[in-house]
Image 1 (cartoon, rainbow, N blue to C red):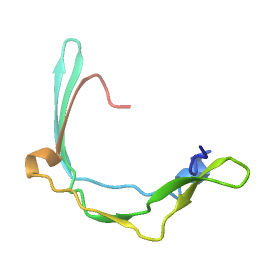
Image 2: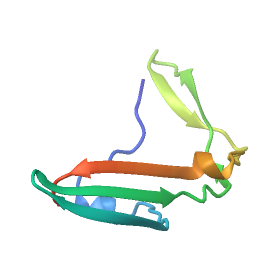
Image 3: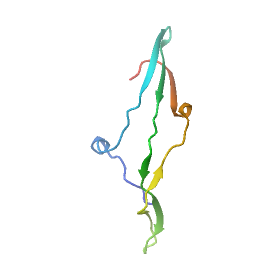
Image 4: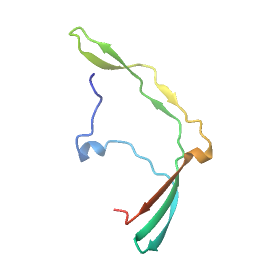
Length: 93
C-alpha cells in the first residue's frame, strides 16, 4: 500500500496544523524531584476530513485514492471526556 505524505524534517513540520488548548497545573517540590499535575481541556471542534480509498492500478500495485466527498467529523463528547490529566515527577524539558 502506498502511504500518504510524511514529515521528513522541520521544514515539513512548519506546514502542519497545531492546536492550543487551555489548561492549568501545579508543582510540588518533593525529595525525589518536582511533582507535576496538569489538566487541560480539548475543545474538539468539528472539521471536514479528506476520505481515501484503496485501489489496484493497471500494473497490479495498490494505491490510495482521495474521494471527492469529505467526511464531517464532529466529536460528540461530554465535558469530562474532553479533559486530559497528566502526572509526572521531574522537570519538564
